[in-house]
Image (tube, rainbow, N blue to C red; front, top):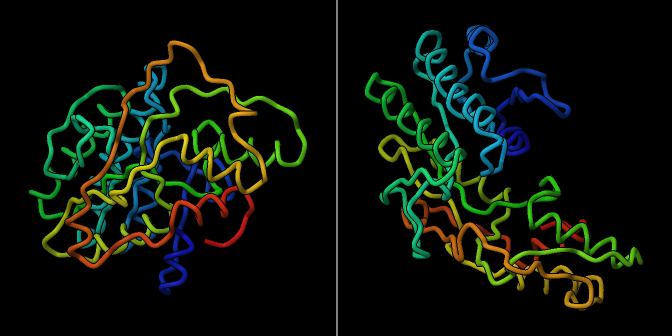
Length: 277
């Protein structure tokens, strides 16, 4: 998001609990209010979360996603009500039957993560009734070299790279028939920017609408290092995935003129070889 803002002449102020950004906790009302009051930003992008559906992250995700959203929304309402606020949502917060999911579909609280996301959306809708311009973009599978290695895309990309360099390790995987979207995060960020330029559209799914199985991602990554993935992957027995297919219907975003540009192969080259997408 920072890189896109700079390319558009918008000066970003990045805040995080880790990394090279300004250190801050979005779940702290005093911190968020002081930051918003000081800078009075034109846009606020709330992207914080612990990206896991496990129950053990219940309170952490509630704090980052729900409390963080309320802190931002109330601070903006108080100090710069003309600002636009973007909250990230997820395809995981919808009822999923394997069919394309749009922002018009029903929510389902199937995990603590999805529960937190649903709460934050209703907060956005409430503040919209108070006059704030609050946007929600529902993300599906979005990837880049910045992904942490517990995400399956980065786990496979980095393992294939090490194996190509001679590590000799075995990668343990679950159900490789599961189908996901493998959209480049840079394309998704451009979708966020396109959404917050709107004055009548406030919620939309932001995804490619194209699914590929984990096996296809394995093929792409291992082929780049001249290896056959089946020689280096051990499949877990009796593994039950969260879903068999998660795919977006991003027709609303496409109607606004946005579509992702980076292909599955180009994304693999970026994440395994470091080549520009």
